Amino acid sequence: MTPDVTTQSDASRAEVMSSVDATPTQSEFVIADVTCDDAWLSMRTTEAPLLDEWT
Image 1: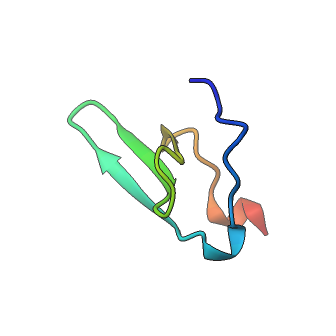
Image 2 (image 1 turned 90 degrees about the vertical axis):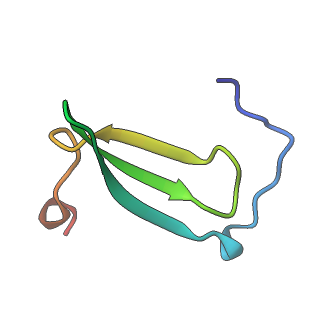
C-alpha cells in the first residue's frame, strides 16, 4: 500500500480505538483511527506488547 503523502491530518481530531479480533485460528490486536479511512494496523496478540511493558 502506497501512502498518500498529499493528505493532511489533524491529530487533534483523531479518535483511536483498539480491539481484539478473534478467529478460530488466531487472535489479532487491531488499532485504528476511526476518523480516517484506511488508518489501521493489526498484529497477532502473541506479538503485541503488554500494557505493563509501556510504562
